[in-house]
Length: 110
Image 1 (cartoon, rainbow, N blue to C red):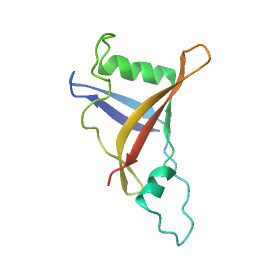
Image 2 (cartoon, one colour):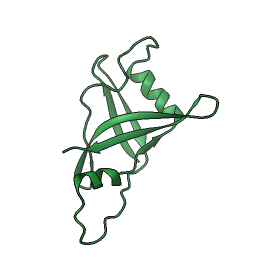
Image 3 (cartoon, rainbow, N blue to C red):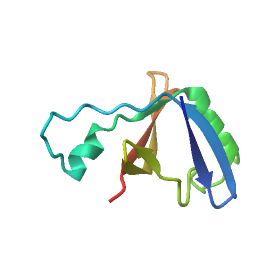
Image 4 (cartoon, one colour):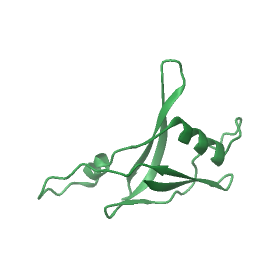
């Protein structure tokens, strides 16, 4: 497990969440992947509904606020010597309109 810190600089708050270990697809021997290929090889981080609710509650928690939750400069994530920066949190919904899980995305810091 790995701990990630997400921040909100408007409310001066932060939340630490534990996520599964990151994996990357193996690059074939002798291949020299481009930055875009490296970025696409990083699997998105899947968050549970509970983790997403906790992130939203601890970073803001005000239903009528428009701060956006995760906001401001985030810590870089380093995997196998490559630095990635936070990109977005994207929620997915079931047929009843309830969140079923969320995807936390990072992109290569170039």
